[in-house]
Image (cartoon, rainbow, N blue to C red; front, side, top):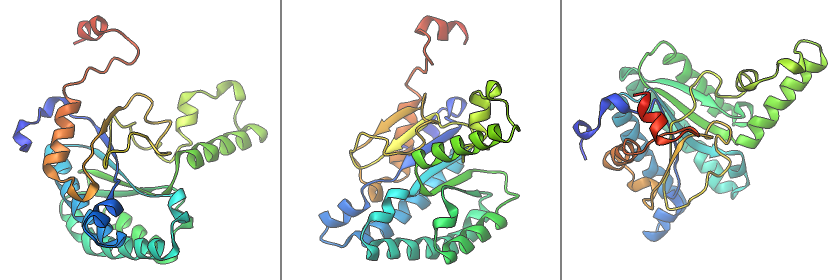
Length: 248
């Protein structure tokens, strides 16, 4: 599929992706899991490029969850090294393409060198106006929601916030994603049909797209196919089809 086949008038503003299957892809080829993660970087490069080309405004990639810290230390260390090396290598190209970098998650839990490289990339791209690339690092939705609740409770305790004034807007303002719209489309690769603690609050009305393709094989064509599938769906938000049609 080519970008010309996509209807630019009905693009999702925000696409979120669970990049799953690097390890399984590598094992199927007799390689270690880290080889799959290295190949997965090529898919990131492809998807970021085509998302920017067709006009997606926000792209969130689930790169490392809080649960991933429980993986074998050798794999975690290799992933952190890969993250640092990839940011160093890609930031200039992202800057040239007008991509703006963001990070959501427990930033302080990352190794110091990762924090440094990520912050530099964020600073370098801070004034860019194209695609907003959001990396979810050391992130989980339960961690995010719990932190939001704690912050709101503290403000209520201090009298800064009246409990009667707590609504969706107030809650959303305390989430990691408060600067971004909620995703209209969530993609998960590698055949798993679950959300895995990713943007649980924000995905309430997102369209979900599950594909058996492992992440290292998910490239431009596969991303465009997911967008085309999204464009065939009717988003009703609790209403019925006739109500949706009457507003068009």
